[in-house]
Amino acid sequence: MNGHVACPSCWSKVHHKCHICNVPVVTRNIALEKVLESAHLPCTYANLGCREFVSYSQRQVHADTCEFGPSLCPIPGCAHKASSGQWRGHFLQDHRDRSIYYCYGHSCTVKIYEEDPYYIFLGPGKDLFLLVKEPIAKFGNVISLFYVDLPDRDNNYFSYELEEWQTDRIYKSPAVSIKEWKRGEVHVSSLLVPSQVLLSGYKVHVLINKKSNVSSSD
Image (tube, rainbow, N blue to C red; front, top):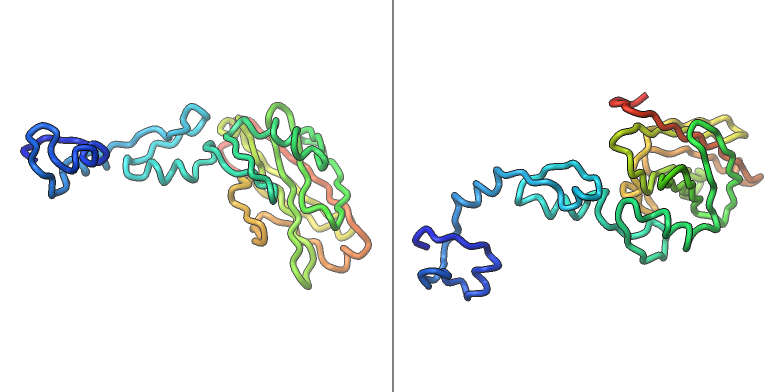
């Protein structure tokens, strides 16, 4: 009222009365809202590596889904939360039973067991990938590789290849975040291993590539 301005939290503290003239506030300040909407601010997690600038009204929406913000561990049943750059220590302490060390550009072979829903790939530095297995009734298993943490991903391009050694099926894809995967859903970045192969057990060759200063995918 009367041109005086305050944020909603301040209005509520003074029972929706102007903190200067004490007049009840019954209308919105549309002009000020438009000014705030036109302002683009750094992400809340800019200090962790996010380079996005978002409008004032969408800042919290972006923060809730930002890859650099804290998130729940993707391992089923684990309630641990962490932010970008913090995941490797957690996986080494609590989930190292299915850990595999890899080097970029070098293929490694994983023996897939029916009882194992995932395998952890520990790379140089804090780079961390997760190979997940999703059973699809009457079809077989879908194998997908996601990154859990790549602290320097803004300066590099990451891709991978999955090859099932019995059928020579090969899948190539750019790396995507584990936040894009949900248990029970088949992601587009997947290799299908047919049911007839599952009966005899199978191996998957995994090749992860890292290229610096690449702006487009292979």
